[in-house]
Image 1 (cartoon, rainbow, N blue to C red):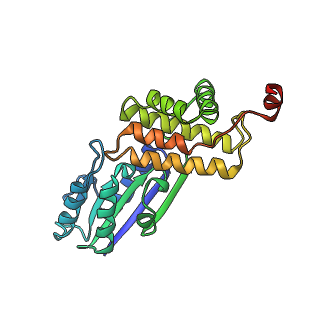
Image 2 (image 1 turned 120 degrees about the horizontal axis):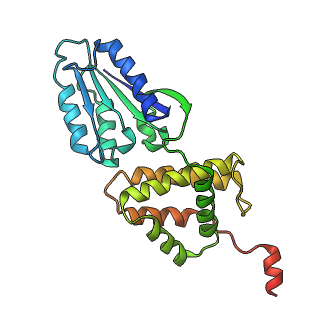
Length: 240
Protein backbone atom coordinates (compact mmCIF):
# COMPACT_ATOMS: atom_id res chain seq x y z
CA UNK A 1 0.00 0.00 0.00
CA UNK A 2 1.21 3.50 -0.81
CA UNK A 3 0.39 6.45 1.37
CA UNK A 4 0.72 9.76 -0.42
CA UNK A 5 1.19 12.93 1.59
CA UNK A 6 1.02 16.38 0.01
CA UNK A 7 2.56 19.32 1.85
CA UNK A 8 1.53 22.72 0.48
CA UNK A 9 1.68 26.34 1.53
CA UNK A 10 4.47 28.06 3.41
CA UNK A 11 7.64 28.38 1.36
CA UNK A 12 10.12 25.81 0.11
CA UNK A 13 12.32 26.08 3.22
CA UNK A 14 9.36 25.48 5.55
CA UNK A 15 8.02 22.57 3.51
CA UNK A 16 11.44 20.91 3.50
CA UNK A 17 11.86 21.42 7.25
CA UNK A 18 8.55 19.66 7.91
CA UNK A 19 9.17 16.76 5.54
CA UNK A 20 12.66 16.15 6.95
CA UNK A 21 11.17 15.87 10.40
CA UNK A 22 8.55 13.37 9.14
CA UNK A 23 11.14 11.32 7.26
CA UNK A 24 13.27 11.06 10.39
CA UNK A 25 10.23 9.68 12.23
CA UNK A 26 10.05 6.86 9.66
CA UNK A 27 13.75 6.20 9.01
CA UNK A 28 15.64 7.87 11.85
CA UNK A 29 17.96 9.61 9.38
CA UNK A 30 17.91 11.55 6.12
CA UNK A 31 20.66 9.37 4.61
CA UNK A 32 18.97 5.99 4.37
CA UNK A 33 18.97 3.41 1.54
CA UNK A 34 15.18 3.25 1.71
CA UNK A 35 14.84 6.97 0.96
CA UNK A 36 14.35 7.87 -2.72
CA UNK A 37 14.76 11.58 -3.48
CA UNK A 38 13.51 12.91 -6.82
CA UNK A 39 14.98 16.21 -8.03
CA UNK A 40 13.84 18.19 -11.08
CA UNK A 41 16.34 18.95 -13.83
CA UNK A 42 14.66 21.22 -14.77
CA UNK A 43 11.42 19.22 -14.50
CA UNK A 44 10.49 15.83 -13.06
CA UNK A 45 10.09 13.54 -16.05
CA UNK A 46 8.07 10.44 -16.76
CA UNK A 47 11.28 8.37 -16.71
CA UNK A 48 11.97 9.53 -13.15
CA UNK A 49 8.47 8.49 -12.09
CA UNK A 50 8.94 5.09 -13.76
CA UNK A 51 12.22 4.74 -11.86
CA UNK A 52 10.30 5.37 -8.64
CA UNK A 53 7.90 2.57 -9.51
CA UNK A 54 10.77 0.19 -10.17
CA UNK A 55 12.41 1.17 -6.88
CA UNK A 56 9.18 0.67 -4.93
CA UNK A 57 8.75 -2.79 -6.42
CA UNK A 58 11.86 -3.87 -4.48
CA UNK A 59 11.58 -4.75 -0.81
CA UNK A 60 12.82 -2.15 1.73
CA UNK A 61 16.48 -2.55 2.67
CA UNK A 62 15.98 -2.25 6.43
CA UNK A 63 13.02 0.06 7.12
CA UNK A 64 9.37 -1.07 7.32
CA UNK A 65 8.56 1.04 4.23
CA UNK A 66 10.30 2.89 1.46
CA UNK A 67 10.09 6.69 1.46
CA UNK A 68 9.88 8.79 -1.71
CA UNK A 69 10.43 12.55 -1.59
CA UNK A 70 9.51 14.81 -4.50
CA UNK A 71 10.57 18.17 -3.08
CA UNK A 72 9.26 20.25 -6.03
CA UNK A 73 6.17 18.36 -7.13
CA UNK A 74 4.92 21.40 -9.05
CA UNK A 75 7.67 20.62 -11.57
CA UNK A 76 6.34 17.16 -12.42
CA UNK A 77 5.37 17.21 -16.09
CA UNK A 78 1.81 16.30 -17.06
CA UNK A 79 2.81 12.92 -18.57
CA UNK A 80 4.82 12.21 -15.41
CA UNK A 81 1.84 13.16 -13.23
CA UNK A 82 -0.31 10.66 -15.11
CA UNK A 83 2.37 8.01 -14.56
CA UNK A 84 2.49 8.89 -10.86
CA UNK A 85 -1.29 8.56 -10.70
CA UNK A 86 -1.04 5.02 -12.06
CA UNK A 87 1.58 4.25 -9.42
CA UNK A 88 -0.78 5.50 -6.71
CA UNK A 89 -3.64 3.47 -8.16
CA UNK A 90 -1.59 0.29 -8.60
CA UNK A 91 1.01 0.39 -5.80
CA UNK A 92 3.96 -1.92 -6.33
CA UNK A 93 4.88 -2.14 -2.64
CA UNK A 94 4.82 -0.54 0.81
CA UNK A 95 5.78 3.12 0.62
CA UNK A 96 5.12 6.65 1.73
CA UNK A 97 5.38 9.30 -0.98
CA UNK A 98 5.88 12.92 0.08
CA UNK A 99 4.94 15.56 -2.49
CA UNK A 100 5.86 19.18 -1.78
CA UNK A 101 4.23 21.99 -3.75
CA UNK A 102 3.45 25.69 -3.20
CA UNK A 103 -0.21 24.93 -3.92
CA UNK A 104 -2.27 21.88 -4.76
CA UNK A 105 -3.54 23.77 -7.83
CA UNK A 106 -0.28 22.91 -9.61
CA UNK A 107 -1.04 19.17 -9.46
CA UNK A 108 -3.73 17.12 -11.15
CA UNK A 109 -6.90 16.96 -9.02
CA UNK A 110 -6.84 13.16 -9.31
CA UNK A 111 -3.43 13.10 -7.60
CA UNK A 112 -4.49 15.57 -4.91
CA UNK A 113 -7.59 13.48 -4.14
CA UNK A 114 -5.35 10.51 -3.30
CA UNK A 115 -3.14 12.48 -0.91
CA UNK A 116 -3.33 13.31 2.76
CA UNK A 117 -2.87 17.08 2.67
CA UNK A 118 -0.89 19.18 5.13
CA UNK A 119 -1.50 22.88 4.54
CA UNK A 120 1.08 25.30 5.94
CA UNK A 121 0.35 28.99 6.37
CA UNK A 122 0.29 30.52 2.92
CA UNK A 123 3.45 32.41 1.95
CA UNK A 124 4.57 33.37 -1.55
CA UNK A 125 7.57 31.64 -3.12
CA UNK A 126 8.71 35.02 -4.33
CA UNK A 127 8.18 38.43 -2.78
CA UNK A 128 7.49 41.62 -4.68
CA UNK A 129 7.74 45.09 -3.21
CA UNK A 130 5.35 47.97 -3.85
CA UNK A 131 7.39 49.21 -6.80
CA UNK A 132 7.17 45.82 -8.53
CA UNK A 133 3.48 45.53 -7.62
CA UNK A 134 2.86 48.87 -9.34
CA UNK A 135 4.83 47.67 -12.36
CA UNK A 136 2.73 44.50 -12.58
CA UNK A 137 -0.48 46.53 -12.21
CA UNK A 138 0.63 48.67 -15.16
CA UNK A 139 1.15 45.51 -17.22
CA UNK A 140 -2.23 44.10 -16.16
CA UNK A 141 -4.08 47.32 -17.00
CA UNK A 142 -2.39 47.40 -20.41
CA UNK A 143 -3.37 43.78 -21.10
CA UNK A 144 -6.98 44.31 -20.08
CA UNK A 145 -7.34 47.18 -22.54
CA UNK A 146 -5.49 45.45 -25.38
CA UNK A 147 -6.78 43.47 -28.32
CA UNK A 148 -5.39 40.17 -29.55
CA UNK A 149 -2.50 41.66 -31.54
CA UNK A 150 -1.16 43.76 -28.68
CA UNK A 151 -1.52 40.84 -26.24
CA UNK A 152 0.66 38.74 -28.53
CA UNK A 153 3.33 41.46 -28.43
CA UNK A 154 3.14 41.67 -24.62
CA UNK A 155 3.44 37.87 -24.38
CA UNK A 156 6.54 37.98 -26.59
CA UNK A 157 8.18 40.57 -24.32
CA UNK A 158 7.38 38.60 -21.16
CA UNK A 159 8.56 35.18 -22.37
CA UNK A 160 12.02 35.39 -24.00
CA UNK A 161 12.77 32.10 -22.23
CA UNK A 162 11.16 29.65 -19.80
CA UNK A 163 12.76 31.22 -16.71
CA UNK A 164 11.42 34.69 -17.54
CA UNK A 165 7.98 33.28 -18.35
CA UNK A 166 7.82 31.53 -14.95
CA UNK A 167 8.94 34.70 -13.16
CA UNK A 168 6.27 36.71 -15.02
CA UNK A 169 3.53 34.24 -13.99
CA UNK A 170 4.68 34.23 -10.37
CA UNK A 171 4.69 38.04 -10.16
CA UNK A 172 1.31 38.24 -11.89
CA UNK A 173 -0.07 35.62 -9.51
CA UNK A 174 1.01 37.61 -6.45
CA UNK A 175 -0.42 40.82 -7.91
CA UNK A 176 -3.78 39.24 -8.82
CA UNK A 177 -4.00 37.84 -5.29
CA UNK A 178 -3.54 41.39 -3.95
CA UNK A 179 -6.24 42.59 -6.35
CA UNK A 180 -8.61 39.88 -5.10
CA UNK A 181 -7.95 40.94 -1.49
CA UNK A 182 -8.42 44.60 -2.51
CA UNK A 183 -4.83 45.39 -1.51
CA UNK A 184 -3.88 46.57 -4.99
CA UNK A 185 -5.99 49.02 -7.03
CA UNK A 186 -7.04 48.07 -10.53
CA UNK A 187 -8.36 50.63 -13.00
CA UNK A 188 -10.93 48.17 -14.37
CA UNK A 189 -13.97 47.06 -12.39
CA UNK A 190 -13.69 43.25 -12.43
CA UNK A 191 -15.87 40.81 -10.55
CA UNK A 192 -14.41 38.35 -8.01
CA UNK A 193 -15.39 35.57 -10.43
CA UNK A 194 -13.31 37.13 -13.23
CA UNK A 195 -10.33 37.53 -10.90
CA UNK A 196 -10.63 33.94 -9.62
CA UNK A 197 -10.79 32.65 -13.21
CA UNK A 198 -7.61 34.55 -14.05
CA UNK A 199 -5.86 33.13 -10.98
CA UNK A 200 -6.81 29.60 -12.03
CA UNK A 201 -5.39 30.22 -15.48
CA UNK A 202 -2.15 31.48 -13.94
CA UNK A 203 -1.84 28.28 -11.88
CA UNK A 204 -2.45 26.24 -15.03
CA UNK A 205 0.16 28.25 -16.95
CA UNK A 206 2.79 27.59 -14.26
CA UNK A 207 1.97 23.90 -14.53
CA UNK A 208 2.40 23.97 -18.32
CA UNK A 209 5.70 25.83 -18.02
CA UNK A 210 7.08 22.77 -16.22
CA UNK A 211 6.50 20.73 -19.39
CA UNK A 212 8.07 21.00 -22.82
CA UNK A 213 5.40 23.40 -24.07
CA UNK A 214 6.79 26.53 -25.75
CA UNK A 215 6.82 29.25 -23.02
CA UNK A 216 5.73 31.97 -25.44
CA UNK A 217 2.67 29.93 -26.42
CA UNK A 218 1.84 29.41 -22.73
CA UNK A 219 2.00 33.15 -22.02
CA UNK A 220 0.03 34.00 -25.17
CA UNK A 221 -2.70 31.57 -24.15
CA UNK A 222 -2.68 33.01 -20.63
CA UNK A 223 -3.11 36.59 -21.83
CA UNK A 224 -5.94 35.58 -24.18
CA UNK A 225 -7.81 34.42 -21.05
CA UNK A 226 -7.40 37.76 -19.28
CA UNK A 227 -10.66 39.75 -19.21
CA UNK A 228 -11.23 42.30 -21.95
CA UNK A 229 -12.08 45.79 -20.74
CA UNK A 230 -13.24 48.39 -23.22
CA UNK A 231 -13.13 52.18 -22.85
CA UNK A 232 -15.11 53.63 -19.99
CA UNK A 233 -18.57 55.06 -20.53
CA UNK A 234 -17.16 58.55 -19.93
CA UNK A 235 -14.47 58.18 -22.59
CA UNK A 236 -17.02 56.78 -25.06
CA UNK A 237 -19.20 59.86 -24.59
CA UNK A 238 -16.20 62.13 -25.22
CA UNK A 239 -15.43 60.28 -28.44
CA UNK A 240 -18.84 61.19 -29.82
